[in-house]
Amino acid sequence: GIPESITPEQIRIVLSACPRNTPVGRRDYAILLLLARLGLRAIEIVSLTLSSITWKAGTITVKGKGNKPGILPLPREVGEAIVDYLHYGRPDSNCKSLFLSACAPIRGLGASQTVTTIARTAIKRAGIETAHYGTHQFRHALASDMLRHGATMTEIGGVLRHSHIKTTSLYAKVDFSALRDLSLPWPGGVI
View 1: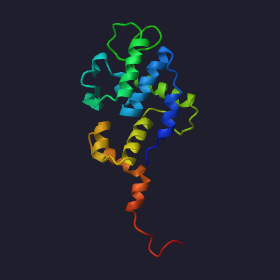
View 2 (view 1 turned 180 degrees about the horizontal axis):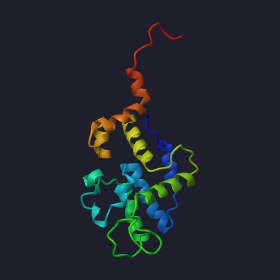
View 3 (view 1 turned 45 degrees about the horizontal axis):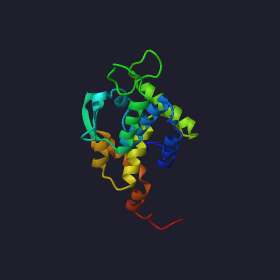
View 4 (view 1 turned 45 degrees about the vertical axis):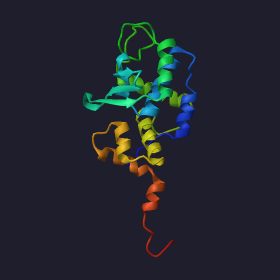
């Protein structure tokens, strides 16, 4: 099937509806940016630690499927949101996890379901009606947007850390304008 995702405009609405004046809002905004700008999986966000970010190099190291590490550039907007969370939102803790729970006991987010709940809450708060409220549609939206802007399947697969091009090829189905250019005229003309 064709991957479902929210639109770039809906992502903008979700991000702008996130309250960034509270510790939880700062955390959730940084998480939403990681979903939207880097296409991280929920489990990858949960596994981030304070040492996952190399500030001088401007990179973030994520543990993908099968614990396979990947190094991605850290967009300025995402880095600034993380810094804001670290300075004004993250509870004091010896825990090495980047993102922490807001309520005692203070610890890492634990399960990927926590990130899914954050995404679902943010989408609903923004008033977006969609068939799915999970985190994966942010990956689909990123891939679809990259495709619309001329990225190759190899480039998209690199950002999403796919092991096989076959996985990335699912996103070719969503670029209807490019597919339309490839289609052949109907024999006998239009009915």
